[in-house]
Image (tube, rainbow, N blue to C red; front, side, top):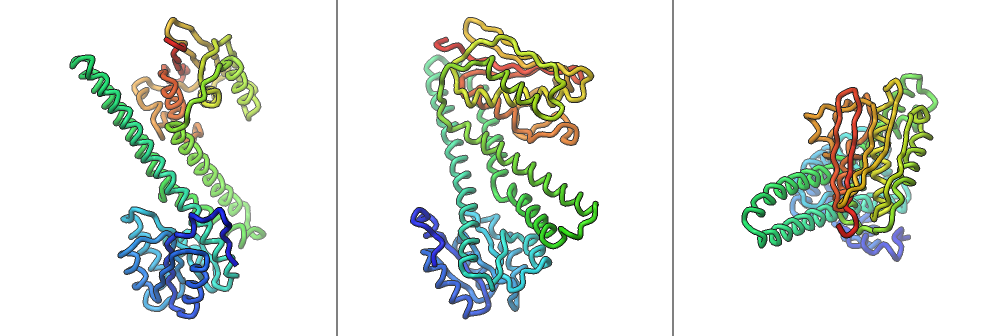
Length: 411
């Protein structure tokens, strides 16, 4: 019975390679997968399978663990080396007759993405294949979007330069230096994001999940306090990696999301963010004050994210202050409105101010102040999308002030 529904047609042309020394099982597996609409090739040994992989690309490899000449673990290691040279990533599903803890551990270490027993119902095997392909196609779509974002940003910069060229050589020379820096910074962000959402970012999360699952399934009733502590550490780091991936995806979406500009009540948004922080642990004792802030024209959802990121930072970095204070205020000018979030917390050294809004840039140790290192990059991206600017001032151990300026409508 097929596990693919009528809306899953894009799975049907996936290219699959099955490697197994049992010709009977290999033929059975091949026919079942072809019945799903997949393009399937097979190989009776590890070396034969590797030779096929070198000649043509595949989306998914089903690999038998126990084989003569070269076992599945060694084949998996070779595949792991090959796929770093491939333009399209490949996922590996290990097939095993026993599915022991040791087999799973060695397979995950060698680079396998998942395990399934050969004795399992064929529907289970098909379901695992479909799940792995879904994850692979999701990653490929992310990479496609990143490339599209990079091209759009380069087109925008090129168009801007062409327009400014008409205004004179002196003006274009100054702007070239600025746009060159902008392009370099944008490329650094895009390269960091591309690297992170690729296989290397998700691999630690997958390995941690595999090992924690082994602990839960095999030792849940036998763990002492140290074992439970180790499991808690694994789960904590899995959550941190998940948060990091979420923040990176948020950052990537900002470049292509169409702005839905409406009147935004900045006072209400800032107060809502403060109340949200108060409800969290250690937030109630912070003396937070929100002044009367001018309304602006902007995307309410994105501006809300700016307030949440800046105010949560202020609450976080005042955690160790004797009398923590956070002040939100604004000044309206003729052409723009400047908003500020001031705190009396840990502050920062101004010689590192240029690092504040970069992806993964942190000015304080992660064990002192948690975070993904992406929040301020999101703030900068949102404000720039609105045609504004963002900057900060601070002094170590004396607090910091973060500013963002938004142009008045029609200015």
